[in-house]
Length: 485
Image (cartoon, rainbow, N blue to C red):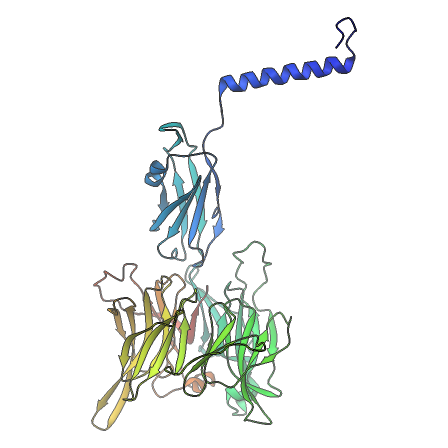
């Protein structure tokens, strides 16, 4: 720049800006970083989490003294778990699902940032909040005024809510993974009045529950919105299973014109694909990843894809008679073996093909469910009792440690027919129903008796608990209880 030449206005502006920026830089260097260390993000903040949510994260805006964080981190009510770190992000993995029906607070204070081998400024006090869904379950009412209708009961409000219309008598139902819909089979009351069996005339429906979605991206729909999924015009709809992803059904159907045409059909609920016919089978269950179905076929259990393709490989397990359930992550299945001495054995088969016999009974094995931690299996079974020429099966519920095969809990149940169980998503309660001796499902549907609902609390420390647990009869009339997820 020529010193004798006068500065242009734009040159003066540029020099002024450069001087100002230089001054600001000097001030910042002299004063240091004035921002305080703090929690920048809490991924569960104000969320309604479920049993599927197993870990939360706290992300800090700078390096923090980890030891003091681990010491000062508070959760109320307490939730046991383990801490791990990845840079400035803390992950807290729960040992068990957070119990439903609670509000939780996460707090952190008195912690300082880490500067080399020393400590710096104290962290901004943090408080985070999250909650779990209300404890709710659905059941089929057997009360006189609402017989055969699906009812949802909320333990917090203690109010039952009926969600299916009076003209339909429900025979079975499944709750989807977000508790937004219930898929069910039902027969028209007029059909039942003509003494037709419910199984011969039932159709498949869906109905909305009216529960507020946990996911903010999901649109809220009021309760009672009904949709017909499968009619009974050409086929009888015998029984069904709902895939964990909530988008597929597998329905066992019989052709009305040709009873030999007895097979499983895959139904896509969003109607993005046509019905797919699979193969004949007995009892069946959809795998945890919603991609396959395990079904009793001949002398064994066959596992085949819901979307058959040319050259699809089929797994066949000739040793087992039927599959009862899968662990939520698909790592294991509970299967029944029918022994030559007329006893039954419960096996756990993992995804590596390893088999482990858990227990054996001379009666029946009706159901088995894995705990959320996959370390316990809850089994509904019976023991055959013989007195003279008379025999009867006495039902009981047992909790078995899968690793040690130790029986942690055993509860005898009232002698009844058609008993069913449901394990809560947080693993802290089992519901089962009571049906009067001598009655059966069709008698209840058509007004033959009144169902009884029972709640059995599970101790949080069941591995160490020595206290006997007693079931509580609920002041409700119904059967087929199923926990909302």
